[in-house]
Image (cartoon, rainbow, N blue to C red; front, side, top):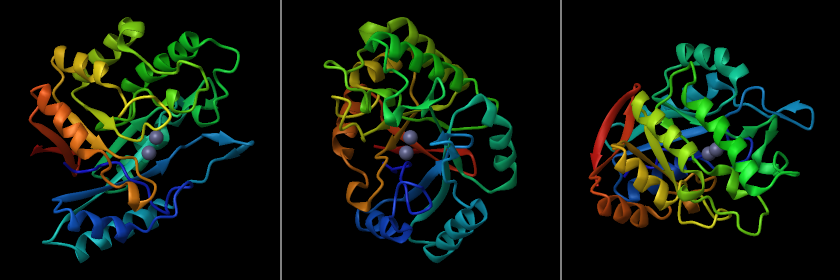
Length: 265
Ligand SMILES: [Zn+2]
Ligand SMILES: [Zn+2]
């Protein structure tokens, strides 16, 4: 499986070198490697726009590495865009301006607060906070800009401090069915994200939610470690692969020039 969700020094929260990921991917016998650095336009932290990568330099660097490794591994240029209604015009513009292979559409901000700091749910019960989070995710599916995969559904639970923080399908069946049906309707991929240390599950969204996606007819999956260091590249790949096989899903996807490429498990 191609790990389509990795962060490098172009992200504000990673120091990792791009080529280290490529070398690691080659060592693991991968067909492709996909970079997806952060681009959270209008995401304000401490009164300031969170640092954004220079997209000229970012895309130029990926294209240069693509040439360098040509014939050995395919190097893909993605971006993880942080969903906000107000950021949509900007994302349409950069999608036109740069040669991206794919966007991962992720909800990081809920009610004007970054989930990372666990602020949006401060005076709310877990149920209330997650409902608010799911409302933002539902809205993100209908984004007016192009994207190929829906990032880490359940992200909010990585950082909350509730005694029972796990998100279970049964507790949010209505909200989740609505989200999963919208993903299938838009014909984009559901991402399985193995960066779930704080969330109480092997990956996000958890098994019960992915199972429901398959039940509803969802077949398109991307694999994501969300690594911020090469040490975590492709983490838990076997766990995800085995689970997908159990569900009768035989392939995952990556994207070349915004077109899906199926890859057998
Ligand atoms: Zn993210
Ligand atoms: Zn990420």
